[in-house]
Image (cartoon, rainbow, N blue to C red; front, side):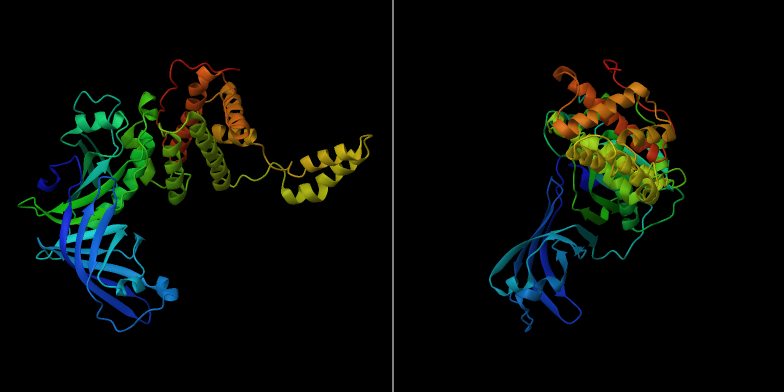
Length: 443
């Protein structure tokens, strides 16, 4: 693991010559030049490319430039062969590179690196550098590594060498930094391509995000030559780090992390579709963001609650309180006729009729109650009433129903509700953290 000994900042740096290729079904344009690649502490992959004159005689009109796919391939001066996927966050349009001399910046979403003298390999383990994963809200001790076994992989999470220094900076608002490395081993000794380990980590990251309420992400993964333990292959990821938060650190006891991870990877109990779940977990992370005003965090949390309820009803195929067709054809005409017979002015009657147009739908309160009862969540009637009041106040007044000094209680109830709902919807069936002891819930 020698290349990961300076954990404070990802220090991977490549320099050499490379080819930039634009291609579509009819044409291919190639540029040659020199490059420098860095992965920044923020997670961004940055390629600085100095373009030589193109060898192509084809001049593509600027109006058609976006129909081309782009690929980058190069050789580093130390023997690393670099390739990108066809997906870039930003890159120059091909017609712009015919102007010489030209320098440009490219930001691929993934970059692969393999030593030239190493054949296409498979490995029994890989190591990943990870950001924003903190063991606790205290940075005055070195945390112990922890392990779990899931999906045919043994996962070991270790703090970086300067963890206490990094953790102190993050806890004091220091932003994004590497905090841990995750070693993923094949349990049965089966050798796999590095991309398989990366795909597993892409999913595993969401377990960390939900458990911690923070935007945990991996920067890059490395595989090693068994005898020398020197890196022979890497995958760099344009890491989209979310915010750090202390919110979930206040929840005790902690959920069973191994059980939570197993539920994520087991379809049998999970209610949410996996792609939908990822988006909802990311929304939870942003609702926990310590840097946002409490009102904004509350709005995000209440919106997430509504999304969770809607997804639950959809997956369970729970429809409207009254079937819409029957309501519009049979019920609504009776109500409308009865209101028109009442001795009120026409404007009032029309207002009442308009308000009944959507009366076949379940209210938020009814839908939330269905979710709580079906998932066996530990909320009583007073808690439900409070949640509905919090949601209504946030949506209509961007405020909380409590006095200002108790706003944090309102917010934490909403976040706790989102957390336990997500856990259950992901198939987790073990115990939940309790609410903090200073709660003052009103009937």
